[in-house]
Image (cartoon, rainbow, N blue to C red; front, top):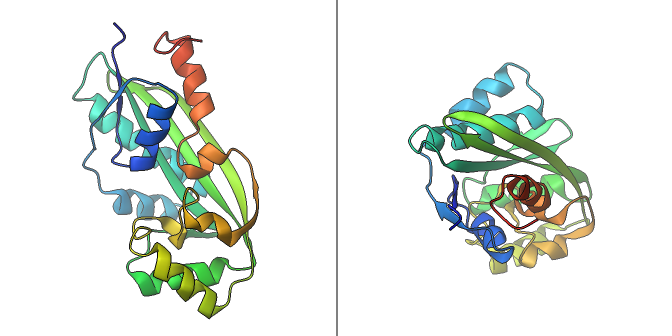
Amino acid sequence: MTVPIILASGSPIRAQLLAQVGIPFEVERPRIDESALKDSLLAEGQPHRNVADALAEMKALRVSQKRPGRLVLGSDQVLSCDGTLYSKPADRADAARQLAALAGRSHQLITAAVVAEDGKPAWRHVEAVSLHVRPLSAQSIEAYLDIAWPAVAGCVGGYMLEAEGLRLFTRIEGDYHAGLGLPVLPVLSYLAARGIVAP
């Protein structure tokens, strides 16, 4: 019997994506201070790609240190637009401000996945997806949030691609699953190589 991997994330969409492709897993949410690490890396001038990677690694390592002999998958995603790194909206008004800032522009969702084993990174993958937001009026943003809030309260940018948020975009370039929060195909390839899933 295959030993399930451990998903070091409380994200429902990541769990859903793993379940959809038949990856056996358990969930163990790590207790970490994401904001402190993010602020520290940004203060050092680290690229946004490195921020996503470090957050994913911290999640994986935190759980892996307590679960020897198990493969632990950590993943994180950041939103980058013209040099600014956005965080989850503090409230509905903040979500509206984020959507207004992204309207009519392109931004990147940078998703990182790290697999840890015995407290050390064993594999990693970072992928960026470019998203092009249609022009949005203040009225259209409020109409959207009337439908989407509070479901998007925990979503950077104030949208979920897997729900009504998809209608905010004119084009998405890159791996759709990575845009949702987990680069499923690279994860599958790694787990197949390790014998966790059938190749």
